[in-house]
Length: 162
Image (cartoon, rainbow, N blue to C red):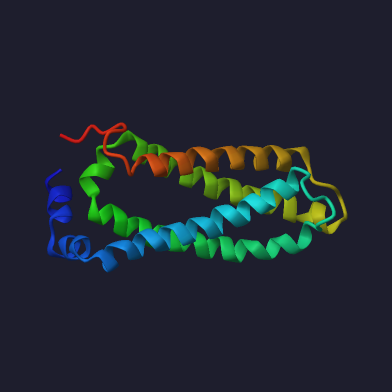
């Protein structure tokens, strides 16, 4: 815990927290990255689940490159946010729920890419039941992950900091 306390009070963390512009930048980047990744993956998931059937599924494969851009924006800004408040993060069980959700979300995106945009799409086959199940689970994981992320902003919720 000493390392996290040192990190939180380091000159780097303090300088960012004391400058409102520098402090807001990772928060804004995190929100934009989340909008890109979650927004586009939600479009793909909903299309797989049968929403907007007139929209062809194939062209949505191009969204994956943008989704990964959003992911890397979130990863970079998320690391910076943890550096600013590491004690709060590592002592809060909600943080681990959020991180588990991020890992599961990435796994579902990779799975959807294989299931819905693989050979079955190229052969003209419909969306498989497995892809629809993955899409539904992916949406559910996003809801839990985003909720956990929002709850991290509130000190009173699941706060076990000493």
